[in-house]
Amino acid sequence: VETALRRGSSSSHFLRRPFSSGSLPDRKVAILGAAGGIGQPLSLLLKLNPLVSSLSLYDIAGTPGVAADVSHINTRAEVAGYAGEDQLGKALEGSDVVIIPAGVPRKPGMTRDDLFNINAGIVKSLATAIAKYCPNALVNIISNPVNSTVPIAAEVFKKAGTYDEKKLFGVTTLDVLRAKTFYAAKAKVPVEEVNVPVVGGHAGITILPLFSQATPASNSLSHEDVKALTKRTQDGGTEVVEAKAGKGSATLSMAYAGAIFAEACLKGLNGVPDIIECSFVQSNITELPFFASKVRLGKNGVEEVLGLGPLSDFEKQGLESLKSELKSSIEKGIKFASEN
Ligand code: NAD
Ligand code: LMR
Image (tube, rainbow, N blue to C red; front, side, top):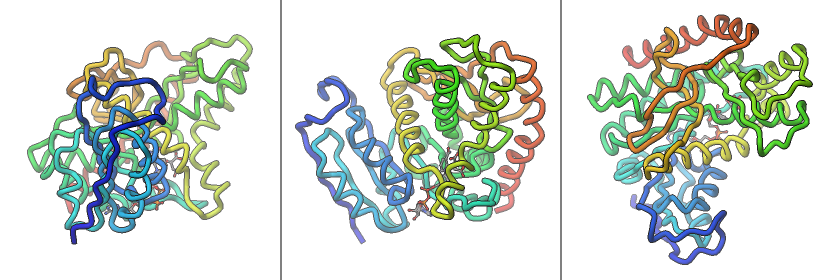
């Protein structure tokens, strides 16, 4: 059934900054899982982004309503909603960036890996469609467990002959936002000025914030403070899962994080220089085949995977401790993709 809703507006008054759409290239962004807890606010935030000319909202159900709703906002992006697998090809065709928040979220007591059995299959089937309908798109994977779903997508693309390691990203931006927020409060510095790289992966101890590189630097933090900030960042997702008490995991902060990362990808595609974000990508900065670190984004996706920089002894220890868990999560994803 053709359920696509095409509505848009050319005049826009509610934008975050002055712009003339005439000077911006057309960019199509597709969100897969757009009717979900993350998908809906992410759709809203991308509708507000002047870099997006076409916003394609796909889910197994519910997207026509979400699309009709956000399409009434008077900003540049034309919105189309697609529901059901027979609409997936149309949703994806011509996409520059595809964001995937499709899949089940955690409940209290679960690890992200407990989501593997359901989400691995969802990501595999969506990646198969991406290889077919928009093999050149930058793919931003939010669905957990990210440490395994990114390797699954890579294997699917390899099998299809479309894999480009520069174009596949696990979204770890929420770890960075958390590290910045928690650091700013503890170090008593203005949060909007704070930068903290977060490396490794996206689950428990594989999340390694590098507070020794935080800016503005703080002399007032003790080793105990840094340990506590590290643990809170690693457990940030669980903090939200427990507070939501069975009603899911982070959605609003994740939508914000996903919108920031997608915007960075779009700016890179548009040739804006010096776009640097942390992301879980194919990497050779450690012996692990995928690793989150700072990456420079450009016209082809990843222009450069940046090194870790100087680490404190505590961070060096954290790096060594995370490797075996991250390695087995990556291998689990690769094995799933090769056997299914
Ligand atoms: P949700 O259940 O509210 O929404 C998920 C959506 O995915 C639903 O609308 C569902 O219909 C849709 N979906 C399921 N199968 C699909 C398919 N085959 N194709 C398209 N859509 C499909 O969940 P949520 O809270 O939005 O979380 C989604 C995922 O994001 C979870 O796996 C969660 O763990 C993960 N997540 C990741 C991060 C991160 O930092 N990377 C942060 C928060 C949540
Ligand atoms: C997060 O970090 O908030 C997400 O990965 C969701 C979760 O399960 O914690």
